Image 1: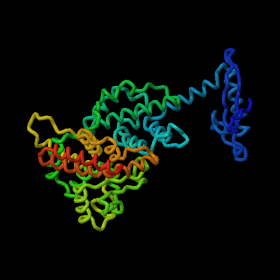
Image 2: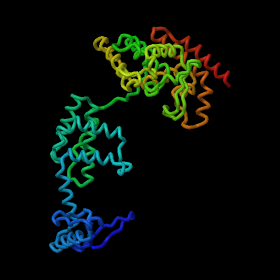
Image 3: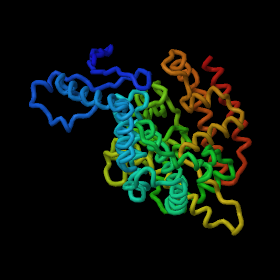
Image 4: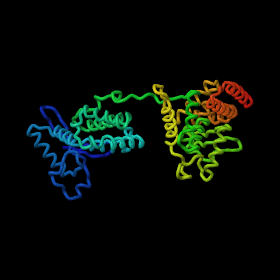
Length: 423
């Protein structure tokens, strides 16, 4: 027996021996000087790999030598015992170990983000804990997993089924890496066998905007939420930029919305010229929510911002209303999200021939932490003001069923003139 010292200074007892003419090494355990000062443990409780005193290491050495004398490899026996212990754990126990490992900062690059870990734990609790939690790893076949995924898809939707399959895949991979001698049932089931997902990118055309906003007027929700959906489209902001907006950011004199860099994705302040339609909506918000610091507070508390999910729920309810009114056999109105409103504005303004620089600046797509980015914000403010007013007028024309061609032509010319005046 000898002591090996790791680069970090840890001491471990090791034993070299020969089996069938081949050298093998057994790591008996790690030296812990504090154990020697305590009352000795029962020798029957000792096992390889534990933290040990010198006296305890010598007891385990004697045990290993007896195995070698009888032609048995103590190192191989150690691995087999660890594998047996691994196989004795249920799927639920392995899932707990997997989540614990993924939450531990010591896992380094393998640690999961809190949001991802929380979602996986939630999916496990809701979809996997009851059917598989108390099952042994070898008891869960790919047929049983496939049947569960089919059931989850029918009852909870395809996304839950796909995520459940992924969690099973990852838990088994973790268990196998720790010595469990089992096959991974999830490897025989492809995500595409459960469900396929279409890209969520969506851009509405003028006709779809008319259909949507006319249906929105009749959707069962508050008038201010209907206005909030339109306000996001008019200003081209991200959902979080609207939900977190406060009245202190609105400059009524310059008719500009000024968002500080701490709230922006690119860490740069963002100035949004407000169209007359956007100012009218803000006036309504101010009238309805005069006591709140937020442009649109939550439903029950004036000092709590609107929920992140609220606007998407309003959009979903409106689309449901549209599809219910569709004649039988007609193609349904495709779903979209708040984020797709930004994409819609960008696409339609590009089609209208407005300068891409103005559009990108309105979307706050600027280079991070650069003087040029701040300068361009100021340089393009005048043409962007004209462009966003034109955008609001075009949107009103489409919703009313009128052509926006004349508005577009005049607006583009006026925006170019505004840029030349700033040069």
